[in-house]
Length: 140
Image (cartoon, rainbow, N blue to C red; front, side, top):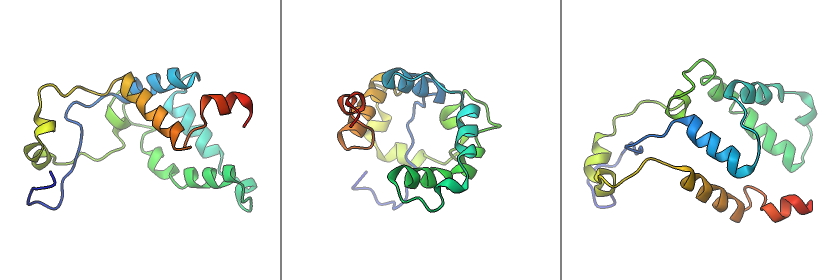
């Protein structure tokens, strides 16, 4: 796609995976029980309180960043739960993207799987976005 003439492409996966499939895989990899979206959203929204207002800790900063997204995540509360991206992402015209990319046109391109989720988690741990397993269990 680097050598195409258009400046704007809406890049989406041509074989979408349902939200609950990715989340189930993620909960298994992280060894945590799956939390239904409505419960997760309720927990996020209930975190809106004054205890984080003046706190400068990393946890408080992360909480404030997540709380800024509550309006976006609220859109998923009344959406069908078994759709790609919980219906949170806009429907976009992606024809130009598919025409420009041989990889996206390939019949061998597969939908995302638990293997992809595992690679994401490994990468997030490697860059420090998630604690490594050994750090988590050692109390670091």
